[in-house]
Image (cartoon, rainbow, N blue to C red):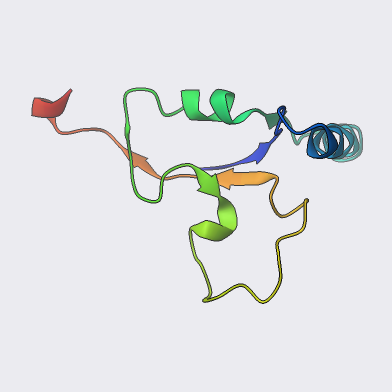
Amino acid sequence: MSHYLDPADDPATHRLARELEHRYVHGLGSGWFRTREQIASYFDGLELIEPGLVELGDWWPYGPPLCPRSAEQRLILGALARIPPVGNR
């Protein structure tokens, strides 16, 4: 799963997330941003696969980064999870 992130604890990127959400929702009809905690709640009861809930670029790294990620690139998280084996529930 990938999801747009609203980093509520960082005022500058929070404002950027709110602006992008407004553009997506009123331009495309979708594109909600949620906090890390809200996104993580979708995985309740599941086992996250490493590296867990991280910036999307951390899932398929293409080697050393050539430059720092832009604020927009940092506003999407991704994770993969599975249902835990019966004995671990």
